[in-house]
Structure formats: C-alpha cells, structure tokens
Length: 317
Image (cartoon, rainbow, N blue to C red; front, top):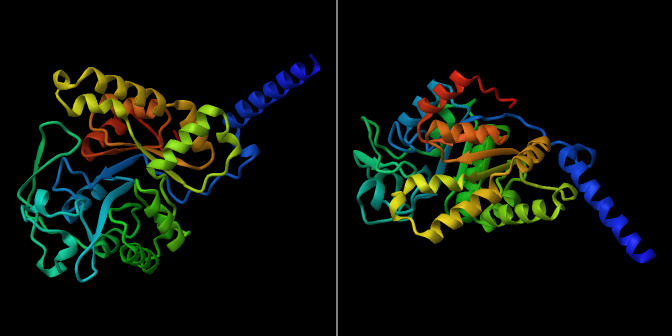
C-alpha cells in the first residue's frame, strides 16, 4: 500500500514538473540568444515569382522586405560553392550531368521555365537571370539579410568552404545551416559551432518522442531552429482524388503529431525558432501563425507579405 502511494505521488510530481517546465522552460534552461527573428522566409528566394535560387529571386525578395533567404548549396568540380537545389543539372538545366562534375565557369544556365515544387501544376517563367550563382555573391549582395543554408551533400569540403565564407563575411550571427541528415548536421556543428544549426529529421523524431513522453522540458537542446513541413499541404500538392486512403490517414496522423501549439510555444520560449514550410496560400499562413510558428517559408514572397501586412502579424508573435 505504501509503495503504491509512493509511486503515485512520484508520478504525480513528475507530471506536475513536466507541465510546469513545458510552459516555463526558463526555470531550467537559459533562453538561447536570438540575433535575428524571421517570420517571412523566401524559399529558394521565392521560386513561384522568379527562377529559384537566382540572384534575381534573392534581390526581389530582399527588396520586398523578406526576413530571411532560404537557399541550397553544392560544390562544383573546381570546388566553388554554388547555390542550387539539385545535385543533378537535369531538372533545372536539361543537362544529364551533376554539378560536382562541372567547373563553375562551364555550368549551364537554368531553363526558361521551372516547375514550382510546392504548388500543384504551377510553373515559374523567369526573366533574364538564369545563372547559377556563387554563395559569396549572395553574401556580397545582401550583407545584412539572414540566410538559411541547406547543405545538400555530405561533403566535408563543402561544409568547410561554407563555414569559411560565413566567417569571412562576418555572418555567423546571420546564418543558420543544416540538412535533414543527422550526419551532415553533426559535421556542420563540429566544423563551426558558432553557426546555429537546424534539427535534422532524426532529431525531429527524437524531439517528438521527448515531447509526448513529457521528457522534453528536462532535456537540453543544441539546435536553435526547427524547420518542419505542414503535412496537411500534401493534400494540395497532389490531386485529392488520386490520394489513397492510407496516404490520407498517414498525412492526418503526421499533421496531428507535428502541428502542436504547446510544442511550438515551448521551443520559442527557449529561444528556438519554429519555421513551417513550404506554405503558399493564406489558409496555411494563418494556421501556422495561429499554432505559434515563428515564421513561414514560402515560394510566393509577395503573397506572404500581403498577408502579414493585412493581418499585422508581428515578429514577436
């Protein structure tokens, strides 16, 4: 009897402490220092309004007032860090080769028309700028704009060179980097622990496990940015009539588990920013901010800016 009472009181104490620390995490953890906060993030510079990952796209987004540029990096044959999403040149340039096999000066231009990955049956037709840019060009052109770098290859030289560029341009306080791969994120952190890192996919799964078991408030977190998809948008990316019952159930379950206001509020209270990607309509913008997301990543920076201006969504929300 006494043992049962003791066990119940211990469990009750744990549940109370977990609930308290979930809402007030700074009792146990020092809040991470935020050198910038982003609510408006332009995915690949705004792939729905200009050809993705081009200087024209970045310039348009910055002039519009974006808080952050999201971009992707690869390494060329002559070890230049370039801004491009795909390792292959097939989709964007129509060339059956890989960036890593081609010297920078010989890289082909983008095609005139590219599909927008996160907008069903949508294509972006670009202007004059179809050139794959260097990362240093982006740093040169936008010295005060935060940049979110997806390291697209598990390549030690790429990671080292990106770090060197970030340091050279004094951007450790304006940069976040990482990848869905935990191996890449670990290498990034080891190469330069002064540049904030993203949660990798395995770490997102660990984060959810900690959250649902009540252990999250007790665990220190190295990452400073959580970037996750809104699973429900999958029903908009495919023809709804072609989704199987299993796909619908999986999407619903993933959305239910991942889109949690209590989780987002806990993380932001600890100084960890939460970005939802890639959202392209007002319904999803509204839902993300209602859930407590710090920012939204979009292919249509003008659309998001108009929404934010009209709804007066502040960075502190």
